[in-house]
Amino acid sequence: MGEWVPDVLGDEFQQLTLPMKADAEGEVVATLVRALPHPSPWWRLHDRRPLADVDVLYVHGWSDYFFQKRLARFWTSRGARFFALDLRKYGRSLRSHQTPGYVTDLTEYDEDIAGALAARGGSAGRRLVLLGHSTGGLTLSLWASRHPDQADAVILNSPWLEFQLGAARPAIAPMVGLQARWWPKDAAPQVDLGFYTRAQNEVADPDDPMSVDLAWRPEQSMTVHVAWLHAILQGHRAVSAGLGIPVPVCVLLSARTAVPTRWSDELTRADSVLVVDDIARAALKLGPSVTVERIDGALHDVFLSRREAREDAYARLDRWVRGWAAGLSD
Image 1 (cartoon, one colour):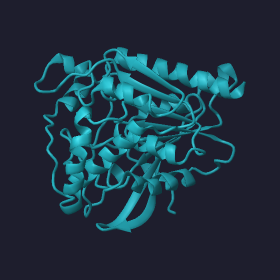
Image 2 (image 1 turned 180 degrees about the vertical axis):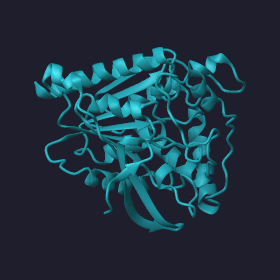
Image 3 (image 1 turned 90 degrees about the vertical axis):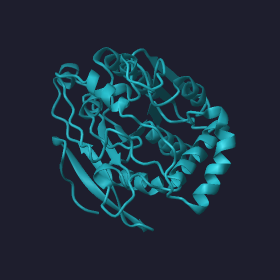
Image 4 (image 1 turned 90 degrees about the horizontal axis):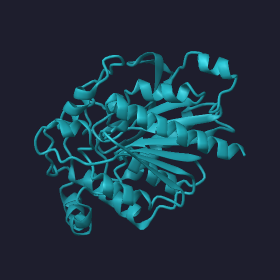
């Protein structure tokens, strides 16, 4: 394993390249990012760090990578160690010979996650919180179900738990599966007019700006390939059947969906990617202890919403995390 080196996000962060087994496209790596918190006056005033024994592992969504400093600081300010994983063929892990984001089975990410957990260092006796956004939320939900003794909590930010045409999924999946078998890298139909990116830019906080690398997070989504879509649909099928995640789960969602057929201000106050009511219903299939938080005015990434909705999301997350931590200490 290599060494931790400075990360593109600046002095608060370092990154570690994790070599993986090669696949049909050649060399494969994942990249783990860790936050390096400054001493917090909040800790000194209260003389306690409520999450001092907690490690957080964040996994991004489709056509994305980790860049959310604000999210990392939420956790480190409470004493947790924060790690973010750029999965193979995304962001820091994308190599020139690779098809961006391309896998044929979501279990391929088990190697990335195992490498990230092993690289944390000093993890004995520490609790693990999994934190996933969108496709990352689906990936971590499936992983937590297959590894029931690994995580202590799962937190999902607008997880992609059901296909946008959920009622049609049983009919669509076999056709996609057949095409994936014979023409795995064919492009699947999709329409992305760049409105989601525009919405994020419209609500960006000038007092706390975020810098995004458009090579890693393009304004319009990366090409969706049929074999990857088949893997996603198989994941949705597993969620629909019930995952039985044994630990508490918190799902944060926008209060409403807006269909992005044309630009309007509504797209700055709603999820324009997923059908949030369907996701809320699917979330109840994750396990026996699921909390669903619906946030008025939130975008698809609730932590990138306009200030009011974003602060509401963080307040709800803080409330849930404090309750979870207190319950474990009783």
